[in-house]
Length: 72
Image (cartoon, rainbow, N blue to C red):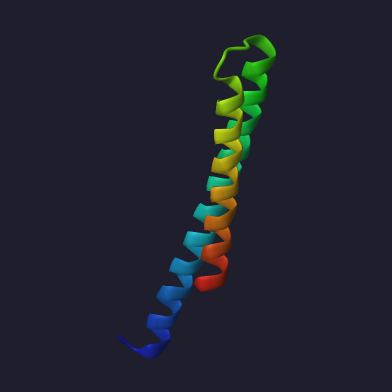
């Protein structure tokens, strides 16, 4: 492959990974909102753990996005 075409292909892949990371963060935020909505209507003994797990998931999603932006 010519060098320009190779760089163009990997640049396109980098953009796709960053877009996928943004979509993953949006999914995590939607999950947090759903957990909050669920807690308004139904409180259980695992609600606090589920909320904590949702926030851990959100932090992980942001870290993945940062990894894609920095390393690629």
